[in-house]
Image (cartoon, rainbow over all chains, first blue to last red; front, top):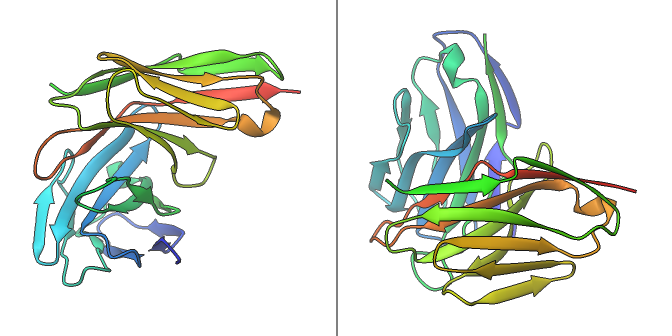
Length: 113
Length: 111
């Protein structure tokens, strides 16, 4: 099992550009989520999904869009990048029942100029 | 409001010097308390889940404990390779339970 994978590892954008951060998992987990991690702020939830076709907002959703067409994939779209979106982004997945342990991907480091 | 607070923010230990990290929580109907380890430039790596007060779990030099208000991560005789940021998170009791993270404790173990 590859677990949770994310691409790209690092990206530089100019203000106003759009891009998609990719996330995939091969553990058949229903729940997937996106976090951003900033110094002194901890991990903050952006969007999450409890299954294909179902998404909802987390703590800091503004400026981000998500969709979930398959169980495996959960891409995060930046519609018009802003310097405030400079951060490290983590995707995570877990089962909806049982142990409910959440597993994280390796992260995408994003710099918006 | 749900909140998880970790202390201290940073901790420096000499190799072999045991200590504890604290995680205080106020999470609605806590369904589980999770500990993660995060190395620089990497994603959080799962360590433990605790479900009820009084529960303890161990892994090598680490032992996690849980009370009704806080959790502790005890590190016994740490080694330099234990240096990392340790994250604590509470899982809310709801149909779409969300993890509420603390800000982490950065541990440095000097040889």
